[in-house]
Image (cartoon, rainbow, N blue to C red; front, side):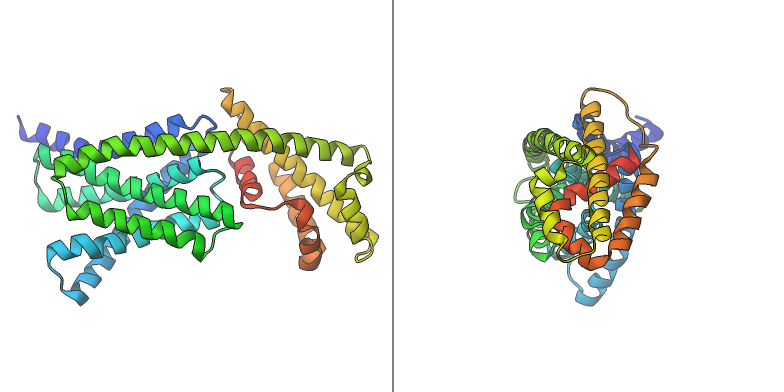
Length: 340
């Protein structure tokens, strides 16, 4: 086999498995929750994290002066997962995840970008074109990087949903789990071939479960949320909101705020309902196979929402928050409308 062919095959084995796995995850997302350009940005983010990890890993190694085995088993998992996890948490805090599926895809994309950059560096440094080596690094180490970060993202998203938003108690367990799984992988309790094979068996099961649970939740959210939003919007449009529990709550607020402020609250509620219905409609159309572009009126509506929020002020917003139902998922809807 010629040198050039071995180089190409080695690079392909080191880079393609994790990227193909990511592509499969994106294609399996029936609601198309993560736009392709966002996946590319997350890959680039992961690659930048790999560069930062290389620098920080060198600093830690210099300070602790550990042998290669100890560094691989304890230092590398800690440093690398803290950095990859920081990128994922930044996306979570920015409300980029609506469901478990987009958290899994984003986490895997960050890990895949990290793994691709790391394998490119190792290839340049080692100059080794052993097909066995790059098969293990491509199907084993690279896929491990993507998977543990995806697991961390899924756990953080799940706990954030339960606790009403991201916080230390929501983030720490997934982070710790990613570090432990990475460390276990680097201990090589099994042979590299056996570890890689086990990884390729277990991971599809994990992602299949995540996709199944997430799709069920998405259908439930679309069904109950869509109907509820439409009913409430119809009441507001018909001028019969006073017949609802929301109307009774607004009547109570009239005792604390001026009539014009309560009117602005009602207008803000109407706009958020319209945005919510539009976002749910986009997901339903995507599920049916239709391509939906960005909402042309999105910027105008969002500007009106932002204006009303600034006009109302913090005190009035806190008072109206119970009927606005501003959760992570509702804020994520705004991101969805902006990307189409």
